[in-house]
Image (cartoon, rainbow, N blue to C red; front, top):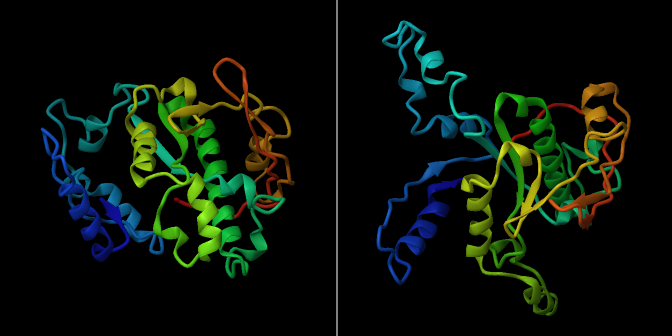
Length: 258
């Protein structure tokens, strides 16, 4: 279980492993340090369990290839590598008109919900852009929204407001279902690369790559101008799914891992 600290992970692991009824084929859960306040921990977490750090310089496979190249050849199954980005409904309902306010990246704003919405709008944009850039290499990038969950993120919310908010909240396990679907489901294929998934359904935007869309923004780098993210999402049968009026900012200053 990835978490920012062992103190946070241990109670969660205990709650899951002690759940009743017990699974017929129980697995094992271990703590994995992943603190996004310290991006150096991301690389360590990504390498954990892969033995990537144990390959000795100069090592070769039996046919004579460099070890890492030989183990990770282009013959591996297309779509077997998957990157899952986590977004939120707030990316569409609480993000500023330009999606990301780059002038406030360091200090943030006075509104916690707005800051959070900006970060999740960024996750959405980067997930789609990753699909465009590396989809031809067989890498799947999908953006998932775990949904409105009864989590600690609502701690401190006034009681009267929580009374109404609880009407649209779900148990935490349903968010886990969506994350597992996005990360492991065979339904997430290269054909659906770059889509968003919510409640185990895909939201497909066929207008994403049209002129003036986010592709133009990213291709222009720091000189790119603000462009509108496509305003509609379409399902596999072409049905209208979601209205999402977000605007891209004027400049792009790097990549985030969220």
